[in-house]
Structures are given as C-alpha cells and as structure tokens.
Picture 1 (cartoon, rainbow, N blue to C red):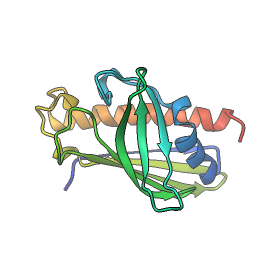
Picture 2: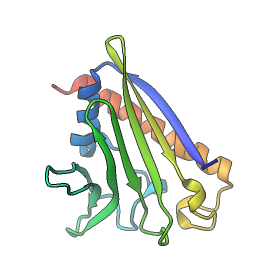
Picture 3: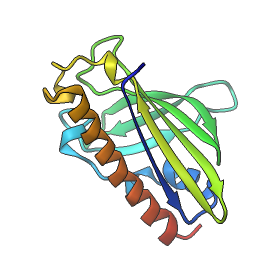
Picture 4: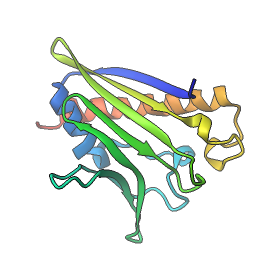
Length: 163
C-alpha cells in the first residue's frame, strides 16, 4: 500500500463554494511551511490553472518572486463541487518521484466535508530533503498535521469570505 495521509474537516459552505475557495482562492488561504516548500526559493504565489475546453490539462503552479513558474503538478480530475486530483512534486524530487493529492467535497447537511488524501510518499526515498531524514511514520504525521492546518485556513476563508 502506498504511503498516504488522509485529513478531513467540515466547512460551513456548499461543496461548490468549498471547491471554489480551494482552487480559486488558494493564494489567500494557503499557509506556506518551511518544512514543505516546493522549491528552495519558496514561498511564491500558488494558483490552480483549470483544464481548458481544448483538452489542455490543468496545472497547480507556484509563481516565484523572480517571476519563474514552478509546476507542482498537473490536474488529472477537475470536478467542481465534487473532486480535485493533482500531482505534487517538489523541486528536489528525481524523475519518477511524485505524489498525488485527491480532494473530495461531500455535502453533509448544510456543510461540506473536505477530505484531502496525499498519497505516494513511498516513491520518495527517506534520504530526499523533502522528508528531512524522518522515519516514514513521523514524516507522514508531520504532513498530516500540516494538511490539518491548511484545511483550518480553508475553513476560515470559506466561512468568512463572500461567495
């Protein structure tokens, strides 16, 4: 089984609103972490570029302060209000090393359960700087804690921002 982290939280918003905040307002709620930087020059401005009608795949990118754009991953599923799946690479990953993030938006009464599953960490060796030399279980716990913090920030943004 792949190494993964699963974190969920309820947001007082519709599934579509939660999806929109997650994708369209990511630069407003995302909390950079020195522990989980995409590049050594992070943090930059994050953005999801949705797939287009001409078949171009969407991307998750970070625009650095120097203007360079780092592609974190491509979007494989873009289903507004339901599901989002995108690749996740850090600059230190070797070819063939990649993780994947799946986000589900499930209506629960007048709230939405946002579930993040970040999987594939077993493709990245423990010696990679992204894992900071931690044993797998400790690294995954730290990753889960960070995703929990991110979801709390998403929740705050979704519940206080107009929309």
